[in-house]
Every structure is written in structure tokens, then in C-alpha cells.
Image (cartoon, rainbow, N blue to C red; front, side):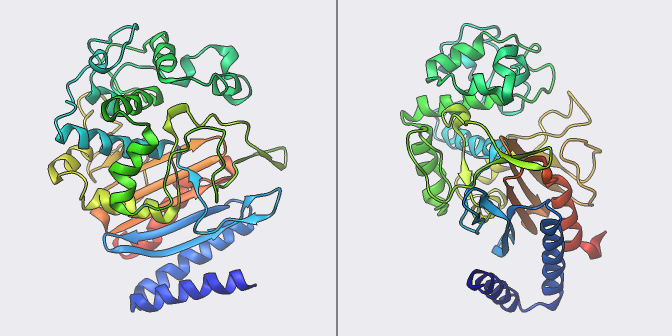
Length: 373
């Protein structure tokens, strides 16, 4: 009861500070939608709305740990999955601005890589998913079983991981097509480590988290440490929630965060302080228009300019926005920056495909911009 009173008191304070009945009614409508979704079993998640000025509304629903009936709170941290790509992109651009990297640097400039196209694949191509590098579907079938359990338990060091990726068959010539590759971004994280001579967790903290005050955002170092306030991940099968299998924290430099920290991250991407406006605009522009007219991708963001009819990350709303989601081991994530930061929406959940994060984000944004539709 005390927790419920605290949550609703915080909401009332946010609404009263806004001093705007229009905004109040919109947020109340959002709240009603989320309550209904949670009641129907489709929203165990933490959700935050903000704009360029800061956080406006935060609310959490459901359980972070079903074994102990621990509720999700606004401080609960989730694996943000592929949303980490936007962090990697900004870190790369910081190093470019410092003269430590060039977007035209090839893979073999920074890594010992025996696979095909090492001298042709550039950092720019890895950031835009045009490198020709494959994704998880390229690994051996036995490593894919039980939700990639064998792959997750290989415990790679950097050298072994680079070697592993280098032995996978490329899907095409670099620069010839868009093909979403998680491995490309994993290699970028390793390049950041080599360039900064520190683990990705330290680089993330010094380059992004500390300067922006993202106090709840971090990268786990290994599986031998315990980390507080983490949501467990669950998949829904045959009417019950099953805890997701073992996760190797060394893979892909996973990032955990809260929905409030992600809105702060959205603010940074709307009004940059860590990189120049020029670099930020370069991140948020469509780099593959000449390769695939149905997809618009920048560096770690899906980009909608309000003109093209793109299919990846599409919302049924007018105007321009950037968006990215993520999915891994029962975790789901979504971050939307609408109209340059007029609205910023973040969602982090832990019940797998029971959450339709893209539709939820679309429904919420429609409520917020109702008069514009």
C-alpha cells in the first residue's frame, strides 16, 4: 500500500508541476492504457516519458523477480539489448572527434582479422550495417540450440571472439547492401576497448555515464559479480513464465539501464553535449538511402524523416522521429525521440514477446500528439 501511495503521489507531483491540464489529461490517458495492459498480462515493464527539458512521467508495473515477488520499480535495471548500439555510435564519434579513429578506418586497421574483406570493411559500414558481416543466423547449428545456449557459454576473450566472427561466412561485399549485424557492433565495442585501453564498462562510464549523470546505467564485467536492482528476464511458454537461460555478460558488451536514464540519453541525442552538433546530425541521418529505399538507418538509430515510407521501426504517426528497440533473452527495450525531442519515450520490459513494445510506443505517442494526427 505504501508503495502504491508513493507512486501515485509522485505522479500527482509531476502533473501538478506541469501546470498544464492538456498534458495532465494526456498522461492520465497513458496511465489508463498501461494499467489495462498490465492487467491483461502484457506489460511488466518500466516506462518513462520526457522531452528536451527532462523527465515528465515515470511508472513501473509487474515483477522484476517472480521467484521472490519483487516488483519492478523506477530504479529497476534491464538489459537494453540493441539500444546499446546508439551508445556505441556516440562513443565511436567521440573517438573520431579526438582524432583517435577515422570512419574510413578498415577492420584490419585495429583488429587482427583473418576473415574475408578485412581490408575493405570500414567503421562507417559497421555502424550502418552495410559491412557484409553476418549475424547470429550464420553460426553453427549446434550453437543455436536452446536459445543459443552453446554460443553463450563459450566465454570468449577479445581475441577469440574476433577470430570466431572472422570465420563466419560474409553475407556480401562491403557497402553493397543493408544487413543488420550485431557482430559488427560487437567488433566496434572491442575497437573502443583497444583504442581507449580499458574495458568497455570503464569506457562507457567515463565517456557517457558520468558526464551525463546516468547513475543507473552500466555494463557488467563478468558473471562472477552480482549487480543490484536487476530485473530477471522471462519467456512465456505454454501458459507459464520461464526464467531465461544463462546469459554470458561478456558477449556484445551488454548495457543495463533504467527507463529514466534512457530518457536522459534521448535528451542527449536531441541536444548533444558529448559530441558536436555536426557529429550528432551525422549519426541521425539516413546513410543507406541509395542501397535500400525501404529502410532508413543512421548510426545505431532507425531514422524517419517524415518523407520516406520505411518499414523497419515504423510507427503510425506523422512527423519525424528516430527509434530503436532491442530484444534478448526475455528483455525488451524501446526508445523513441519524436520531432527532435518534443517527446521522448522509453520502455524496458522483461516478459519477452508478451510485450509488443513497438505497438505500445505507437499507442502512447498517438495519445501525446493526438491533436496533430
